[in-house]
Image (cartoon, rainbow, N blue to C red; front, side, top):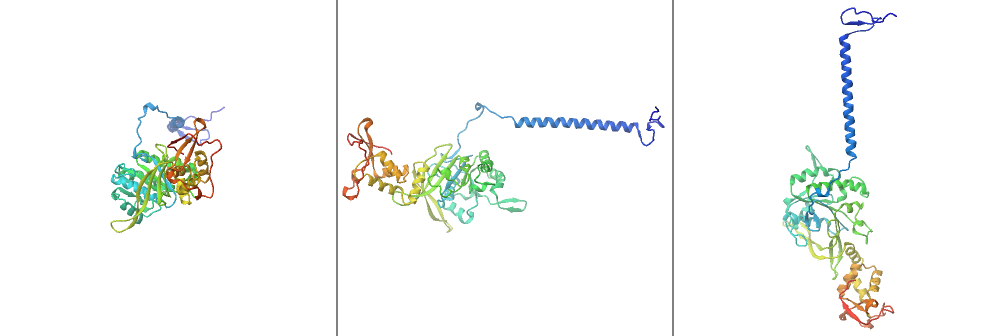
Length: 431
């Protein structure tokens, strides 16, 4: 068969039989060399990409562990011992009208001047940052701060966002990341107040996952810089009697993420006067009970603006649930005075077993805390009657409170047949 390639017609030129295509040998070599180079480069890139993918996959699937012995333990950075801690998220909730915002301003006012907290302890001096979506900073918040002696140079209100020459309102749900630089520029920020805290959540504030997702960056920022967050919120309607954390509006995640939950409520004291109570309902880092009485007082600033301020009162003891229960009983017409009246009636004709007294008082919807306080106010002592295992504890009114038998239309005696009234021993007792 005759070859389809003829002899070169000229040096470096090859032609086919039909003379439809011709190329120099040098061109063919260059094209071949270029093709080889491209293939080599593509192959190398493919290997590098594969290596990166393997590296990323390996990183994502590797758990990082560290020995406790390699960590440096550190104490809680308390701004107010047991109540407010640097780098932690705090929640302040309560029913409407209890002055939650004013309470938070009272606490940070002490910080701006290095003043005193409600228990008399000294506050660390520093700056505070405040965002509010509910009160005007000029005619409401600033006058309150003035009335409570705050150093206004150390209070910084978040007013908005600026891009170039354009300004817009600050959106807590999306602009919090930009706040970090501003706080670091201010320096020595001790507390950030967010009122209301629900404004931080982009999605549904009743969904656990969404609340946790949106609170996490804020909490991490507080941990990194070291300031405390006080988020203000409300109690949901129709939640009386529940645990305070369960009463917080929105998802339970708000109370779960918070390291300390503080609550405020209204009640009446033994004299029937209106008082307010500020309580510690939860703490993952310290004691989780006790509180203070407080009142909201009208005040006038130096330039004649009418406003209000907090006046702190006595220390109170007990759990938030019990104390809130007392407050709600008082507002409903019951409370300690009603409980005292019931106990007096039950003991009018003599001693009654402590077990039966507790049962009767609880049956009338009084909390354990209210019963205990009523017992203390009446000066009732627990008396053991009978010896050994057959003895029982009995409540009796003090002699000065014994009521003539003919003053009552019914006789009350809840002692059982086996509850003998001999061999009496009087002791101080609790309910």
